[in-house]
Picture 1 (cartoon, rainbow, N blue to C red):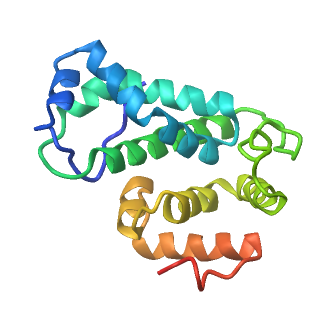
Picture 2: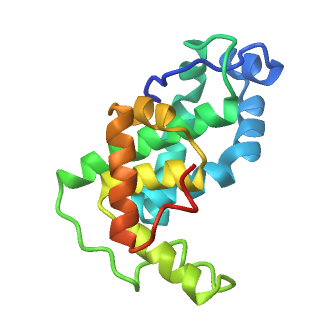
Length: 184
């Protein structure tokens, strides 16, 4: 699976990026070691299961050398990788909607279930975030957890900035929290 286009370019002047685009598997491994944990968390929060998140991460890194060749010397690599991860995760969610699936329950493996060190309130919030509809969860995770701007979210999801703001507001409402302290 190839990595979809992103709205901005990355820094190809980075020697590591240059090595990856030249086909250096060791350099790709270094990028994986550097960013995989964060990208897995992003994917997991978007797709809801560890297995799907691992598949997203795999798909991302398989297509990464080719995707990196299409970009130029602008932007932040980590932010671009988060956007690419979100796009691959959303493609997986679209594919999942086309096939039958079982409902997500509290007993499912999820981030909250795998983190017994979290306070019960945080585990409950993670579970509620996982139950948000895909479009709301995507905006919520990208904005509130990953710190993306509404412009970046709009470009990543192919929606307007206004739609991003509306989805975030609806996510807050669905979670039963106010956004006064969370949304600048």
